Amino acid sequence: MSVKKHIPNIITLLNLTSGLIALDYAYNANLGMAFFWVCMGIFFDFWDGFAARALKVQSPLGLQLDSLADMVTSGVVPGVAMFKMIENITMDDNAGLTWDSGYIVLLPFLGFIITLGAAYRLAKFNVDTRQTDSFIGLPTPANALFIMSLPIIAYNDTYPFLSPVFSNPFILIGISLLSAFVMNAEIPLFSLKIKYLNWETNKLQFSFLILSILLLFALQYIAIPLIIVLYVLLSVVNNKLWTKKA
Image (cartoon, rainbow, N blue to C red):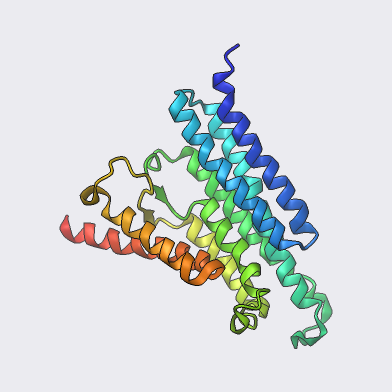
């Protein structure tokens, strides 16, 4: 039995393990630790594919296992986190919600739209032959980082002006709907893989990387959702430029 072929799958299972730990923290409303473990899961998600390519042991089993792990780490956990964020607001007597309580208790469940969108996106990815070197629609790990960063920003005293924004359940529900849409939209996103270390062939990737680092240093946690938005916007602009050239 070759041990080598199992190494990427073991790394994928570490992604799933991280997702399960994050799920426990998210369910108990410890969204800071949930964010940390989602980041760990995404770290392992990057390296399992890298290991499979480096060891030349890519397999259909690895592809399916990777999607199942991502479904937990980047699908279920963000949905639970959004559920908890909305639930915390609806349970707050000072939130100013005046609807009948029967409707109010249903609002948090709309956060699971994120999970439904992630499931559809992952299933579509597995049968879409166009997404080998780049993506169509926002990848679930990027979406998970976006969603999981929101409670960190909302509950951080560094950005008090953003707290009222993320204390509105309808804004959070709107974000959930937009999240599910962008994951499944027919928007080609440029590849983040850098095959050759030269500016001419990778200027878009290098520019994005430099801007991301500058944003992280300047804005810290608040930079995470901005970087995801920047990635989508740069891809849209890049697509428009390529269309004009063609």
